[in-house]
Picture (cartoon, rainbow, N blue to C red):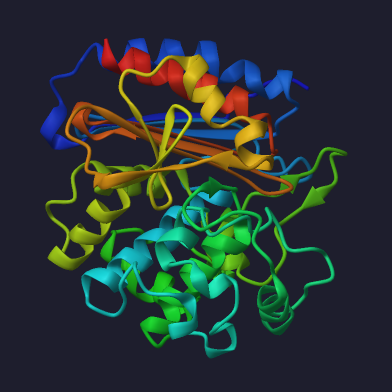
Length: 380
């Protein structure tokens, strides 16, 4: 496949017009690390967003659809997969900041069907950090509805005590977001789209892509190059349901880096997602985001996002008290669906951040390696 540079835009904010050399250096790094990914992994299109000291830069490669050959832009919508979990976490910490729930609560307080079950021994914090005791990575294909999911959770038996083992799990954090919506007495998708996203300044991010935005929605492709998009599943909106653009994801990262202009309750919620609760190898698990002291070697970042961390249980050590970052800290999250891949990383102390979005689920290591190179170039 011929790699196509469909569009490249470099956008300055008025506050940072003086960084005249940054675009040239950044462009060279993006060209060296990102452009080759199209051919190496047969990716139709990639969008890259970068923020550096208040400046925004966007680089767009390839097409949104093999059939239509529409160029990718900074406004193209991609499925961001598990980066959606950071939005679920923010909704939950927002519910905590507004007094609707406590992270020490148990799920049975909001879902009576789970009261007294083995799962009810875990707290909401355990659900949000994948440490409830061994919930699976995914629900089986037989679980089609929320009622099916609840029936499974009623019978579920843990493989470890809450707070001792991290097992990455869509049902775990999906339930976390679902309970947050119950505590706020509203539908999860409504709360995200009508309340949280507008307060974050995200106008082109959706769970349910409206007809007016469908033309921007990239077509995803699976491993056999068949066109695919994510389907519905119990707690799927919470775990992997967000569709967003490079432009909006950079705004999201900037809100994480500097939330001063955001309303106080949401600012406290964002700060809440930056708290570290469990040490898992070299990684610190927070709510949604995962953390590392910065600078972080590429090998350590790859290990923290490896298959072993995704597919296997790992020992977790509770941080007492929970860790509020005091030095330079990198926050990151990978995301994928059958037809899309995504990665977001930022370092608030350096005021830098990167997002990479693609309409094929290229290897996690490729996304992380490219983003790591970009962050290093921004830090020099």
